[in-house]
Image (cartoon, rainbow, N blue to C red; front, side, top):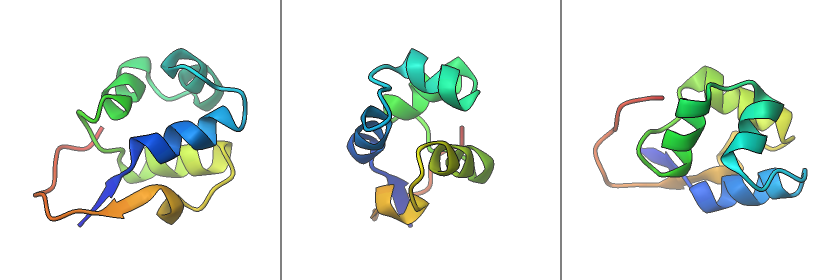
Amino acid sequence: MHKLNVRKLRDKARQHGDESGHAIQKRTGINQTTVYRILRGGAQPDLITALRLSITYDFDIRDVMDESDEPAEASA
């Protein structure tokens, strides 16, 4: 299983000037609650959300994913 590395996602967002969850939400259009749950590690993005992040911040989604032995969590 793979898990989003929040630090790497934040680094990608910062490269585009987005320092906060609010800025990420504004640029991506992803629901604010979803953004904050993802950034706190309380949820993993679903496929559509992950694609939206990768397109907005111009990265391959595999670049912000880490392998994890943990069981799958609920999607955001």
